[in-house]
Amino acid sequence: MFESEIKNSEELTTKISTALENKFHFPIPVLLRTFSGIEKMIALDPFKGIKVTPHIRLYATFLSQRDFQSEKPKSKFTTYVSPDKSFRIISATENAVFSVLDLSKAKTPEAMGVLEKEFGKNVTTRNWNTVVKIAKL
Image 1 (cartoon, rainbow, N blue to C red):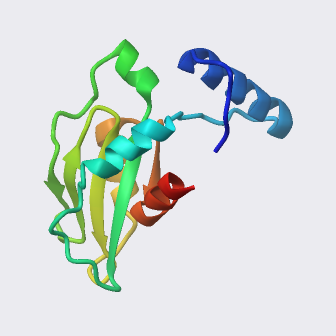
Image 2: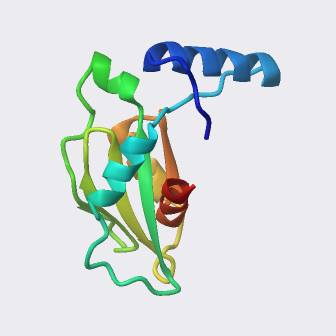
């Protein structure tokens, strides 16, 4: 998390990406979200009605806003259930996908492959608890 005087998100993304690449000597994709954007995402209450158990994990996958400036999202679906029923996409917005993983049924980490195939490789996934903690900072 950081604060910036730069208001143009594309300019800020470029500046951060360049600084990271200069520091680590390889390109690192940057996906920006504003604090208010995180708050709005939480207000959607995307996991309402999902019973959380020790085996259930809730995830938010952030999609690249740059992708949406140049083309439509690759996927039009907003829900999905894996063949083994271990992974479900329960909803999607223009810049995030909300999913549930049942570790008691998961055989392989195919969830990320599904997300990348459907929404592109320029995504990052975070546990929902992490997203909620960010909003409380």
